[in-house]
Image 1 (cartoon, rainbow, N blue to C red):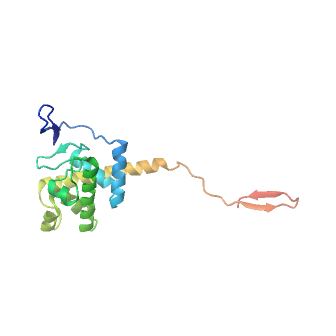
Image 2: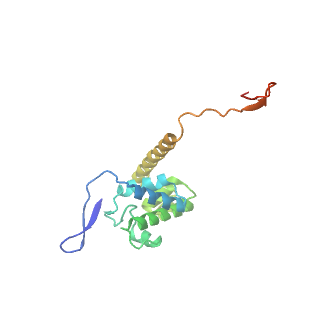
Length: 188
């Protein structure tokens, strides 16, 4: 993976090799991904898995094939889904999620085909009636699937930890007036 930066002396964009780093997901970025995924009805865990696999959350990432940004949009895909600046984080996510939504609809929510098409294009998936026999695409589908499984498990853990640990069962309470005229309560 490479990173594009402006040369301080010339102002020109220069590609350089990116050093692997831990994924950086700020609360603002997490909220942006949540919002865009929800707007398009795409599972947040899928979006996270694609971003993690594509760029490791590096908004400056550029692939050797010219894919750009967090969701590694190639220029034709960016244009197709309304992205004018693929380095703009919000636009990049918006375009990538629109593409995922399109693929999910096109492949009738078949995640392996959708993920394969995100990497190799829907025409390749159609041509091979499934995941193309390309090593890169097969590895990509496997990696995204592993990331998706981990992201779902993380979400389940968050949901479980947010729930109360112990709930008392709801008991019916019966109110009655005793022979002495006082109000009494009891459970059945």
